[in-house]
Amino acid sequence: MIKNDLSPITKRVLTLIEEKEMQDKQLVLALGLANGAVTDWKKGRSKPSTDAIIKIADYFDVTTDYLLGRIEDRELFAENDPYLRIAKNEDEEELLSEFKALSKSSQRIVWGIIEQEKRRTSEANSEAV
Image (cartoon, rainbow, N blue to C red):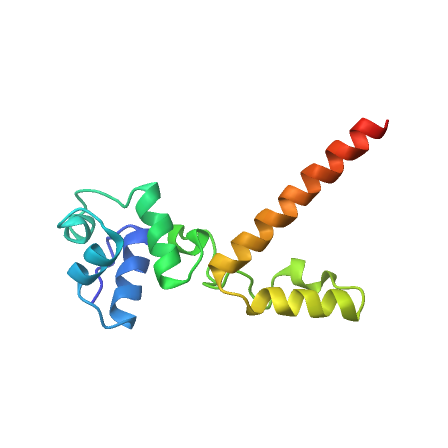
């Protein structure tokens, strides 16, 4: 059972550990965290570092915003996300559907490619002026 006086991030991490039926030590080993890190979080002696939060989010396939308590939905792109309702035609709908089907790490790669292409296009447009 998870105590109520824990920080939101600690509660969520512990819930994810329980749901996976893991031991704290398994998470520590899997993510290369300091020995006793989860115990320290449970006892309020420390909180997960930014690096740990990112590793935990990737490991459990949830967003960092979910871990931090900023949103309730664990999914990278939730069905009720207003940004998902922007598709204007079948091609856009298919592209969005394919993107959602990718793993989080693959989505990040695709997003990086998009950002790179936007910068390249912006630079090309600047040079043309």
